[in-house]
Image 1 (cartoon, rainbow, N blue to C red):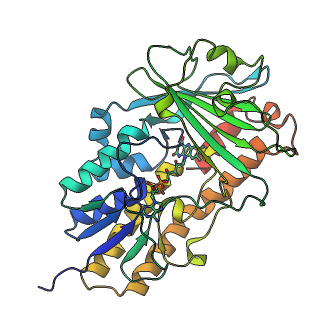
Image 2 (image 1 turned 90 degrees about the horizontal axis):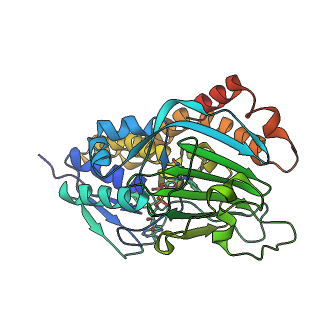
Length: 349
Ligand SMILES: Cc1cc2nc3c(=O)[nH]c(=O)nc-3n(C[C@H](O)[C@H](O)[C@H](O)COP(=O)(O)OP(=O)(O)OC[C@H]3O[C@@H](n4cnc5c(N)ncnc54)[C@H](O)[C@@H]3O)c2cc1C
């Protein structure tokens, strides 16, 4: 029997670690290079919704997530200025778990499965190197490109209970949105996506951005809340334009392939799904049944087949909710129409 060719994964986030675990389950030697270390906080709504939960189950990881304290989210509510949607049941419950725990859990599982994890090891490699998978996360766009998006998140510890009517509350603001949801252990995650203002001014601190606009329901909800300073993180220059795998150089999964608008709450799921889609072609390459170009092509075709329609709807949803050209849009549609909410929920996952 010939030895398997090793796979190198750049990026030990959700996509890279999930792929690493899937490949180790097939006996493939894997090295993951991760620039950071574990545990660490990430800018994320920490709301796993969509087919990714089934991927976690197939890889034997769902039970570990529950053991790590994941909690289900069963209801959602939208708030826009003084208007609120009813509290609606989520068509399929989501799973909420702090990235601080989730990424560390996957890293540990990967190592227990015999994978080699190199932490605090930033690695740069040409896109087309054989046997190398790019799972290095989101691309940032140049500062001069418009619109310029920021992501900010912080946790409120259990000592400061936040009164929520729904498991996920989406508060739409003038410049973006802020999602608030429980993540287990009585903690609440507050995570927002914000568009830079045309005049570039925003004087208050980023934690103030998370509290919502003066007089808003969110500000009232968070009146007594203190953020855990350790959990605070932010990213700038998010590139939200969807990409097709067939148009991209190199072997890519997760956000390194394409970012779905965060408002869908489906990015983590896409990281898990794209990792699972990569396991078979890469195991076939590693074990000599497929050459590298064919493995890459098969992965790209699979990703485009699964994600193209979802990304198109995600873009429409993002526009509907956050376009400055549509004042009052949310009140007219998502807040009122139960049918439309269910339709968009289904199409974006
Ligand atoms: C504001 C906001 C809110 C969001 N909310 C949600 C949500 O509620 N639900 C949801 O499903 N998704 C959400 N997402 C999206 C989700 O966070 C991402 O889709 C997901 O983290 C993608 O996983 P990934 O593994 O591809 O990338 P990442 O998790 O970003 O991991 C990439 C890893 O690569 C490492 N790396 C980068 N470059 C190198 C290098 N050169 N060498 C070595 N390592 C490197 C990084 O350190 C990082 O650990 C949100 C995103 C944003 C911005």
